[in-house]
Image 1 (spheres, rainbow, N blue to C red):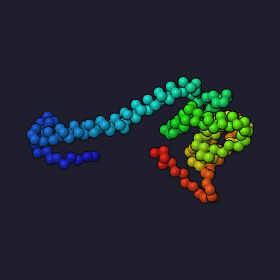
Image 2 (cartoon, one colour):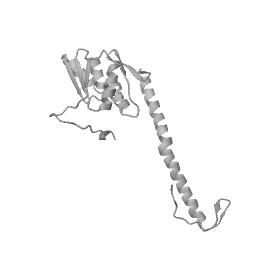
Image 3 (tube, one colour):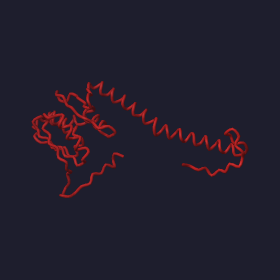
Image 4 (cartoon, rainbow, N blue to C red):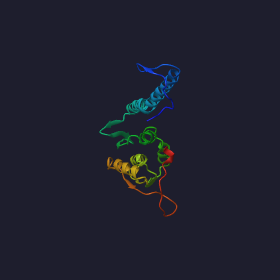
Amino acid sequence: TCALPISLEQPIIHGAVHGPMNDRLFQWARFLGKAIDKVLWHCRILPLIQDYEEYCRQAELLRKNGIQFAEGVYTLDCAGRPLRVALRSKTTDFMVFEQVLIEKEYQPIIELFRMNGRAVRTILDAGANIGLTSLQLAQHFPDAVVLAVEPDSGNYRQLSRNLSLNPQARVTALNVGVWHESTTLKPDNSFRS
């Protein structure tokens, strides 16, 4: 509740205040109306519009890249084989999906190893997040063993889910962190704020 520091000494006739207080009340009402409109716009309407715009952008991105979406799972071609992943909403998962699997952020590293003709036997993905890079590397290097290390429990659960969607991948998930000594670590997610 909000109380205005205004005393109504003028008579009210048919809901309107007559006299010098009328202008002040009208200004307050207009100010409050605009403030409420802005709050509703920014808190309720604008996020819906932004969500819809982002949904349309993502749908177009998926269409252009031939990525299928059904029953909460994205299916795309990766190294000539299907790769299936699930993403959480209201997280950075789609952004990471876009960077790793659509923009192919790690493709130069993959090409470098292929050009050198070196056998890749073990891959350590420290900070594996939800496993997209681990799965991509496992697709490109099917003879390698991939260790996906992820300390955050929420990300680790999603990583495990994504591994279960791709049983052919030789990826082992570990819910631990990597540090220079044996200690207890506390994840810091402040960079995502």
